[in-house]
Length: 286
Image 1 (cartoon, rainbow, N blue to C red):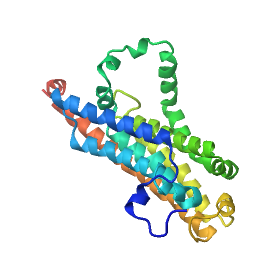
Image 2: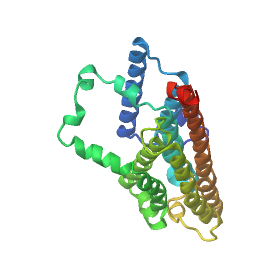
Image 3: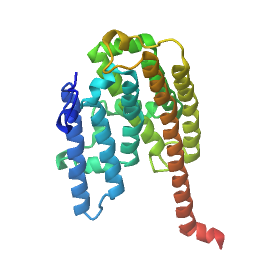
Image 4: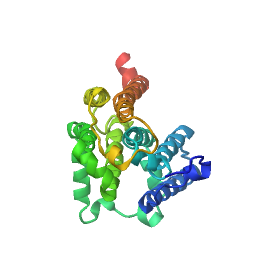
């Protein structure tokens, strides 16, 4: 258990060392910084807002996976729900909002950038799988469904006991969140559903998340016995732990959808402004 009076060093020290988290974080940040420098040198600097959004997304994701917070996420239900709020919503949201893919690609070594990836054997499987996962109804279903799946009491019980299953749960939440939020926050109106349809999707995913959060919050029985069996990180009544966790499942995800809707409205406004300034629009007005 963490020290009773932790310092900043001990707080940032991983509860358990996960090489995969360190490797993915280091490679991603290194590629992004290299890409920023390369684009700036070619006269295409990355805006401060985009860079900040990307680094915030990576930082909060790393914080809930590879610091002392991971201990609390394993031994408190409400800390676990905070962890998944970051992994499934907040971290992927900020990363997708930064639209970092062109910057990451620019950070690759030149020989890798010269490769025709689409011509490689099996590339069509990856592209086809990605397109299937990004089919809007399926993406929305998976986004909500994975929350329900891992919060099914019997499944949650074994996921918190088995370290490999625990890692699978966390990575699946993060990757699914990244896919979904990129589908929604992609600034290009030509890629993915229209901005109007994206708003409808955001409204649709709010309802089941609210219902699930309300059910957990208002339930009079203990749904997740694993935290009583393994012990909690600090003394808290099981009902209070579950209620706070339910509220975290209930309110913040709905707020994230509301924020994303505001982003969509800003995209629509920008699209209208660009359309109004285009030569075709001026000709039509004349």
